[in-house]
Image 1 (cartoon, rainbow, N blue to C red):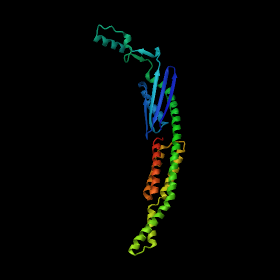
Image 2: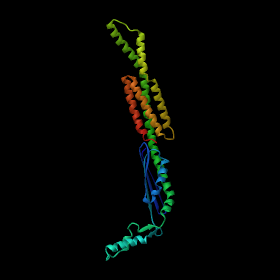
Image 3: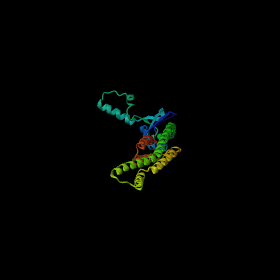
Image 4: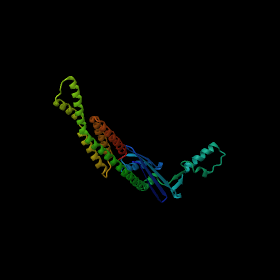
Amino acid sequence: MTGHGQGTYTNNGLTLTVEIRTVNSRYAKVNVRCGEAYQSIEPKIEELVKKEIRRGTVQVNVRIERKLSASSIRVNDSILQQYADSIKRIDPTSAIAFESLLGLPGVIEESTDRREMVESDWPHIESTIENALFKLGEMRAAEGASMELDLVKNCDAIEASVADIERKAPGVIENYQNRLTEKLNALLQEAGTEMSKSDIIREVGIFADRCDISEETVRLRTHIEQFRKVIGQKESQGRKLDFLTQEMFRETNTIGSKANNAEIAQFVVDMKTNIERIREMVQNIE
């Protein structure tokens, strides 16, 4: 599901801002961006995020700002001298203002060991990410509640169509028997012969067996019942819902191919429309 969460931390010259955004996807993919100095902790950040988010594309942006004190920086004399020597070789008469060289790469360095700095900052980064994940979870929970209502509404619509089909199905066989009898009687009357009732009954029985959809409607109702139970659970199970949706579509498709009735065919179209709506939403559930 889509969502956004942000966490911040400021203390002792360290300012952290964590933004986490999620978009819909069938699989889990986490992209992490943080400063070059902190790239070593990107796998830890990804692991932390995957504990909470198991499906979707996640973008994690970690901005780290640190105010440096005089004691935490030093001038690299060797690099500075190399810059000065290079300028002298190019232009021996040039008057070098050393303060103009301080902004060049490598001249100003942090005296604190980078690895130690990252390790000392990690607890603050971790707690800030957890805060952002919590806010993200709140937003996704609100969206999930709205989605659950929509899923239930579509399940209700499918069940209503199943009930209509079950009421209509017995009449299909009766209508077929009447049409068959009338047609055969007309043909046989022209030929001057008669057809026994047992022959008609046998033919109707074959038709009834071929277009019987009772098993499919029972299985479809079972899938809907299971679907309702899963979406009512606290633990999200998107893949199970995805499987049940596929089974619902399969049974509905079979009903459409066996029913041999225009009205039932229209109910099937309506059911497929509802199932497609469910399928699109389920793709976004963890």
